[in-house]
Structures are given as structure tokens and as C-alpha cells.
Figure 1 (cartoon, rainbow over the protein chains, first blue to last red):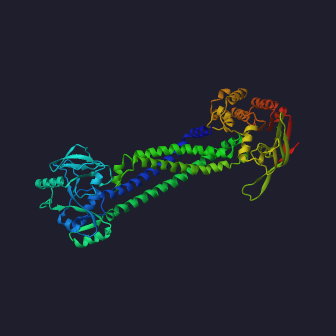
Figure 2 (cartoon, rainbow over the protein chains, first blue to last red; figure 1 turned 180 degrees about the vertical axis):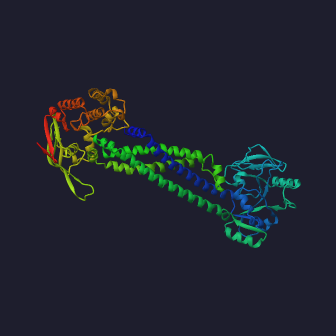
Figure 3 (cartoon, each protein chain N blue to C red; figure 1 turned 90 degrees about the vertical axis):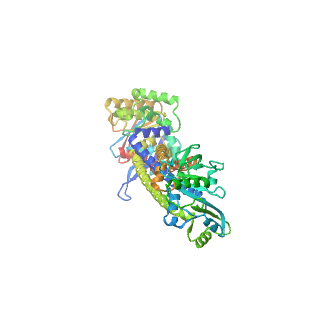
Amino acid sequence: MLHSLALKNLRGKPGRTAVLMILTALLALTVISGTIIVSSLRSGLSSLEDRLGAEIMVVPYEATTKKSFENILLQGSTGYFYMDKSVMDQVSETEGIGELSAQFYLASTSSGCCSIPVQLIGFDPETDFTIQPWIRRSFNEPLKENDIVIGNDLNAFVGDTLQFYGVDCRVAAKLEKTGTSFDTTVFTGFDTIKKMTRASIDKGLNTYKGVDPEAVVSCLLINTSDERSPEEVVNDTNLHNKKVRAVRTKEMISGVSDSLGGVSRIVGILMAAVWVLGGVILLLAFTMSVNERKKEFAVMRVIGASRGLLARTVMSEALAVGLFGSLIGIALGLFIMLPFAGAAEQLLAMPYLLPSAGKTAALAAAALAVSVLTGALTAAVSAYRISRLDTGVILRGDN
Amino acid sequence: MVLKGEGIAKEFIREGRGTNRFPAVSDTDIELAPGTLTVLSGRSGSGKTTLLNMLSGLLPPTRGRVLLGEQDLYSLPDRELSRLRNEKIGVIPQGQTAIHSLTVSENILLPCALYGKPDKSAEAYAAKLMEQLDIAPLAGVRPSELSGGELRRMAIARALIRRPEIIFADEPTGDLDDENTAAVFDFLRSTAHEGAAVLVVTHEASAGDYADRQLVMKAGKIDI
């Protein structure tokens, strides 16, 4: 009866109830949206760290000055740069190298020879330690000649044939979503990418005339052994190899990490502001609602309601409003945040990976708890006041 | 069961005047016996409603005790006193006292619903009270659609639904016409006949015709 009284009280004042529900919905919407954004950015950064997969990258010196390699890896731009393959032998002699593998970059074009303009990355299946462990999650077989593995955002499916510079390639696997530029990248073995490069040179479609695909690589990926720190290996490599530059991947993504911190702070401040504002308005709304019905609460005391019962009636109303409002807010938040993740990624220009279904459910539950609890806390003030109501004085004052 | 007020007094603090207290009711003794209807009259501000609220367990006195049988009401914790009020004391407050989100029938049954679910006998008794008070056709109507007299009769039914031993009525005919006034006093009289102790605070001159005893309050004291 008490719960139905609370619901009837809410139904009896639809305008007031709607305002309270909109406020709690707004609160829940802000909390769920904010937490999904922050969580997606963190997952994106973590995914980027995982995908880079090496402690050190060695690239031609001019690639660092033009920032072209950072743009390719972090911003999703397409491009290429090359250095002499002999650099690999020189670098391999550096003390403290644990794993070393080369990659070959190529950019496809939007002209008729290519199905889609994307970044193409070739790896050496013999030495690769960054791409293959990841590919194996989707495709646990060695790549054959002309086989490619495509990023999750590319509009093709396993078994499809894509053409790059006239070379027909079979999509052997589609990778899981990473929230990074790798979602629009095509990966393949050295043999296939060199075949594409030769074809592009033959067609005169790129500007690297004179490049022999067999004699160059784009970058080297290094993991250090336990004997030396990545910092020492970077310093040593840069000291002895003037035409190339070794960069710690951690430093490379520090800019992304800083931006993420900034965005997280802004989202956090926004959430806190909405939370405080929403809380204050809810407090005022509950106070007004209870004051308006002081006489009704006095009547309930007259017919034998204890102070606790009055407080529970107010709390039941607040919890009902909080629960319905929060569920609406969370549903709306998920409806906005999940389908428009791509737009959020473009807007923020940062790695952005939506949390898993389980984590999203946990975030939704936390947002529900936060907004319902906020509503309950603000109503608790009114519940306490109404439980201290001096019935005699109120009835006397009404006379 | 007899309800007694022993030396009860109530002082209020005037707001905005520091610790300036004024006595609403001075040390007063009163006894309400089963089967009697007591009428308490007096000028406005003489302390009638304050005395009624103290006797009904709604307003703790500054001094003195209120005993229901041997039980000192104000020595009970709020939960027990509320339960006791719910079961043994019926109050018809002054003014309009409906819960506006409930229908007439739900308002009347509300005292039975506070600590459980109204059973069939309560529902049947509510129907009987509404019949007796001539508001049966309004059972499913919201209070906002009722007249003053209908609201007052609804409040009477609500006060009686638990078949209380003590009934307090504060100006129960305040805004009623002569016909309705007579009907209400008739009803309270018959309730007293059935064994309840009834105290009616009223300015109505005709109330004396229904009373077993008449008391007059003057400046916070009963002038017998």
C-alpha cells in the first residue's frame, strides 16, 4: 500500500513527477555518456599500445621530421617512407636487442587500380612479433601469397577479392576492432606488398622512383632484451646510425595520452558540474514537493503513521522517480553513445574503443546506482524534515 | 478504556521573540470515559485544539501526562505511539484533510493500509460507513471533486474505520449546513452509544443537545 501510495502521489502530480524524472534522466545520461567516453578513450590508448607491440621503432630520419610515421600510426593518414635494408643489419648489432623485425609501408590510391585508398603494411612472417600474434586471434594460419588481413572498419569480408595496383588479393581475415588507425589498415606479407610496390612503380602511380622494393624497408620494430633498458638501446641506435631515428613508442603516444588526460578531465568536470547542479535542483524540487504536501503528511500522522513511515513514503517516491528517470537516461545515453562511436572517434581525433558488452553493462549499472543514489540522498533531506514534522503545530497552524 | 489528561500543559515559543513563551493550555485535568460524548467549546485561541492534539497523542505536552488506561502515551517510542493511535484513537481534524492522490474509498481505508493490507471486513465496514454517511456513490471519486460536507463525512469515516476506542473531532461541522451538521452529530452520538469515548471541539450551539457533558475552555483552562 505504501508503495502504491507513493506511485499514486507521483501520478497525481504528473508535471512535478515529469520534472523530477527528467532531472534524474539527465543526471544518468551525463554519467553514462561521460564514463563511456572516458572508458573508450582509455581502451583506445591501451589498444594502441598493444597494437604497436614494440618498445622501439626505427624509421628514416626524414619520416620523423615530417611527422609522417606518427600520422600514419596515430591519425590514420596514409603514406610511406623507406630506408636502406642494410640499416637492419647495423641496428641488429646494437647491444640489448631482443626482438627485431622490419615492416614495409605502402599507400593505395583511389584510382581505378585500387579497390580502396588505405594504408598497407607488410611484415616479415619470419621475424614479426607485433602483427602476427594479433592476426592469430582472427586467423590462425600462415598467410599465403596475395592473402591480406584487413582492419575492422574496412567494408569487405573474408573471401572477398580486393585489388591494389592491379594485384588481386584475397581477404583471409578481418581483424577485431581496435579503435585505432589500424582499423582502416591492410596487412600482408613482405612478398605480396613488394609485388604491389613493383606494380605501382610500373604504373607510375607513386613518387618513389628508383626505389628497389627488395633493397628497402620502412621501419624496424624492436623489443629489448633484459640486459639493457629501451632508453639505452634508443640512445645507442641514434648514436651509431645517423640517417635513421629510433623512437620509444611510449613517447610517441605520450601526446595521445596527454590529450586523453585533458579530455578525461573536461568530461570529469562536466559530469561533476551536472551532478552538483542536478543534485541541488533535485533537493529543491523534493523540498518544494514535500512542503506542498505538509498537511497531507500531517494527516498521515493523525491516522497513525510513524515518523519512519512518513520518511519511507518520501523515499519510496524518490526511489521510484530515480529508478524510472535513471533507466530512461541510461537507455538514451546508450542509444546515443553506442551507434555514434565512430562520430565520437572522429570528433576527438583519438583512439576510441567502446568497452565490451559486459563492461558497458557494469558502467550502466554504476550510472544507475549513482543517479538513483543522488536522488535518494537529496530526498533523504526532505524525508528527514518530514519525519520531524510537528503534526500538532501544522494542524494548529492550518486552523 | 478511559483516557485521562493529568495536569497537562502546553507552552509555545513565539517566533521572533527570543525565549518568550506563551501558555496555550495551562495545567489541566480531563477524563474521557467510554460511551460518553463530551463537547468542548470556547472562544478562538482558548486552547481547545491544542488540548485535543495533546490528548490524541499528536502533540507532547510541556508538562503532565496523558494516560490511555494505565499507559502513559508520551512515554512510548514514536513507533509504538503511532501504532496505538492507529488502532485505538480516531481523529477528525479541522479543515480539509484528504490525501488528494487517493480516491474517497482509498482515503477511508488508508488507516488500515498503513501497517498491512485492508482485509475484506475492513472493506465491508468502509462500505457500511460510506452508506451511513451518504457518500457511497462517491467511493471511486477523487477528493478534488467533493464538496466541503462530503469531504468532512469522508474524514469521519476515515477516523472510524479502525473502530477506535477514543474519537476526537475538531470542529467537525465547521463548514456544514444545518442538515449536515445534525447528521454528523447524530453519527458521533451513535458512535458514543456503541461504546467509544468521543470528544468534540466545536463552536456549534446545538452540539449541547447531543452531549453527555459540556466543557468550556477559557484562556487555556477548562471552566467547568
